[in-house]
Image (tube, rainbow, N blue to C red; front, side, top):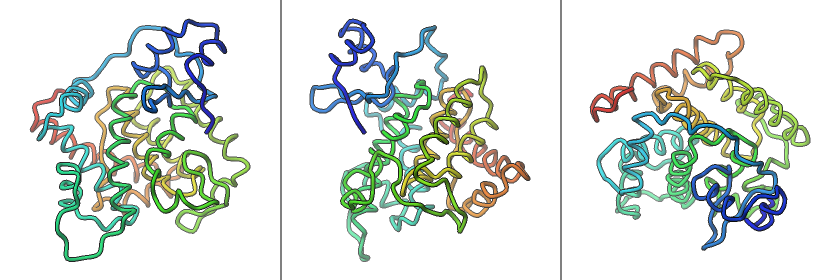
Amino acid sequence: MEYISITEFAAKFEVPERTVRSWCSTGRIPGAHLVGKTWNIPYEAMLPAKGKKPKESPLLSRLRQEKDNHIKGGIYHRTQIDLTYNSNHIEGSRLTHEQTRYIFETNTIGITNEAVKIDDIVETVNHFRCIDHIIDHAFDRPTEAMIKQLHLLLKSGTSDSRQSWFKVGDYKKLPNEVGGNETCPPEKVHEKMAALLKGYNAKTSVTLEDIIDLHCQFERIHPFQDGNGRVGRLLMFKECLAHCIVPFIITEELKFYYYRGLKEWGKVNGYLSDTCLAAQDAYKSALDYFKIRY
């Protein structure tokens, strides 16, 4: 992915550098991130939309408060561990829930009698960073640059990232399949993703079904060589936060129903909707425990 500086972005759109710096620090430019003390801005990033600040749900407020103040044992703590463990486990990670918790709480793997894949550890730590990113950038409209940034955060430092054919933070170079089904060819991914996001962002109001549909279409395009499921579920969680919809975590126990729902979406939407609603009920139970309104 190509990046430009604050100075270059300011010159490109004829706005003050001070304004651009403020947009970056408040998360109004999707994909902008600090490298040391310098902001890197995706070349394709556009000016932030004008208008009032979106309404922040009690859940998003709590997540941000607990994250920024390093509060342990709350909904942020539980979300980091449960979402990371389940999303990685669905994709084949062999780390246990307890090992995931240990990594989050102590930044160490702890003692284990079994061999542990380095990639499982790296992707666990990276997934924690991804969750922080979607909390900080919950109100950013989904763009190709933002989605590529999530992939970059997730896959950086993995063995895949050292392969010449693997594009970390960018779309796939080689054709791939999911569940034995063909996906979008590499040369058409940009076109399909741009159309998907244009249609989604044109909606004046977003429902849970809209978010699920975005996820299904994303997974069918399968824009990345690997990491599509995790990036897609992170995007789904983020969009729920953005639109004051209770988010949810697809657990290992729901994996079969989740995959069936993805396959049948467009024919029998109830399979996936019911699965997501069941997962949402479980997350609501956590919100009830922590006394967070929804």
